[in-house]
Length: 481
Image (tube, rainbow, N blue to C red):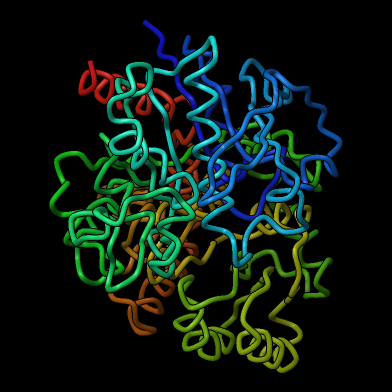
C-alpha cells in the first residue's frame, strides 16, 4: 500500500539550491512516486524559482496566516516540474521573494510562515498526507505545531512526522523573543521543549516532537549521540535513540555515469576500464601537468573548510607532493586554504593542478581522470564525493566517519575485498598512512583493477534509499493510527 507523504524542504532542485539538501529533496519524491506512493514536495516560492523559469499556478484562494500579532496573506501555488510529484510553493513575496534563501534577521518568522501555511492548507484542502517528512531546522516547526498548536485538531492531529537531520551543525538557534512571532507558547521554553542554553533551538524542537527521526547515514546517527559530534544535542538524541535511524542519500546514476558522461574524453565501465586512461591524460592536459600514465593522480572536489579535513590535507600535502604523484583540486572556501594551496601549486607546477572555483564539467573530469579521491573529513553526515568517485572507479581514501564509514570498506590485500582505503584518527600521520597503502596497491595493476571493480559494483541508487524511507513512513504512520 502506498503512502501519502508531504516532503517539506527549504530548498529543492530544480527550484532553488544552496547545498546538498536541495539535491535530496528534488531526487527523492519522483523515486518514491515510482514505488507507488503519493508524494508531494513543498518549499517557499523564492525569487530563485521565478529566475529558474519554473511555471506554477494557484491551487487555492489566498488565506491569512498568523505571524506574531499580525496576519500575513499567503497563496499556495503548484508546479509540475518534478515528474509525478506535484510541488507546492508557498507564495508570500514580502517574506520569500528575496535574492538569498537564508541569512535574514526575520528567518524565524519566514520559516514559521512556511510551516504554518502548509498546515492550514492541509486543514482546509482536499488532500491530506499521512506523513509529513521535514528536513533540517527550516521545517522543524511542523512537528512542534502538530503536537502543540494543532494537538486537538481532528484533521491534523493524526498526521505522523519524520524529521531528517542533514547536518547537525545547523540548528536554527534564536533569541527567546521570537517565541511570540513564531506562535509558540512560553510554556515550551523549557529543557524538555525548545530551550537551548537560554536560546530557542528549532531543530531541538523537532528532535523532541517528531514521531521518528533520521539522518543521512547509520554511522552519523550513532555519532551524533556522542559529545564529539552531538553539537550539544547529544543528550536529546541519545534519549530518542530508539526512534533515530540512518538512511544514506542516493546518487543520480544518470548524472554520474562514466559510460555516458558528456564531459569526459572517453566513456568506460567496469567491464572496460582501459578508456579511463584517456580521461586521465585529458585531466593532465587541462592543468598543464606532464602526461605520465603511470604516475598516481589524486583528486579532490570539495568545499575548502576544516569540516572537510582541509587542515589534515594541508599537513600532508607538502610531504605528498615530494613523491612521484600528481594532484588535481577543485573547490572554494576559506581564504587560508586558498592561499596555502595556491602557494603549493606555484611551488609544484608539474605536480599540482588547482582550480579555486565551482566548475561542474571539471568536477566530472576530476572524478574520472583521477586514480584516487581524497576525503579526510573531520565529520561527514553522508558525503557524495566518495559515492561518485567509486562510480567512476576512482578509489576513495577516507576517514572512518559518518557516511564515509557506511560506504567505503578498507581494502584487504589478503582477501581482495574492499573498495577504498580508510583511516581512523583525524591526523596527518593516519591520513598519510592510508595514502601510502593506496600507492603500494596502485603499483600492482591487476590488484588495483580488482579494487576498482569492487568500487564500481556498489549500489548507491535512490531506489535503495527510497525503499528505506518508505519503511520509516510505515513505522511513523503506525504510531499515529
